[in-house]
Image (cartoon, rainbow, N blue to C red; front, side, top):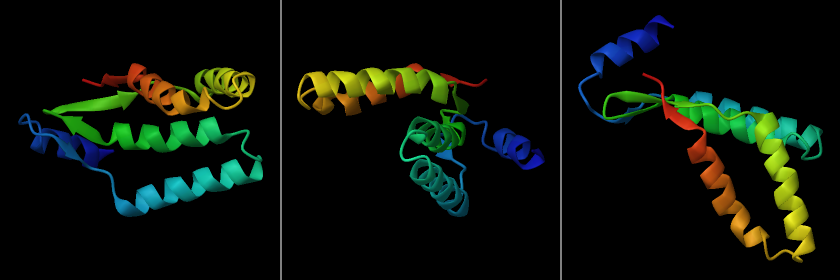
Length: 113
């Protein structure tokens, strides 16, 4: 925790940067893949929130750290809705799922400080 405080004070000059590490990213992605695989895809929204949250929480834009406020429970409801709409429209709505997911991510991303 001390490292983060030091990094923020050193970089608090209006610059944008990412302070996550490669090994952390690999670890989070492996964990997400394992959880998704072992739950047969049911916990994919949790894995997605976990990895995306890590990425956003390590991002600083113009000296202000970002924070992800989304939850797997909130995404799961949307995920079911998007799945049903895709089934009803014979897959056509699936073309918009990526955009809908991106809108959901942005809606749940704020400045932490």
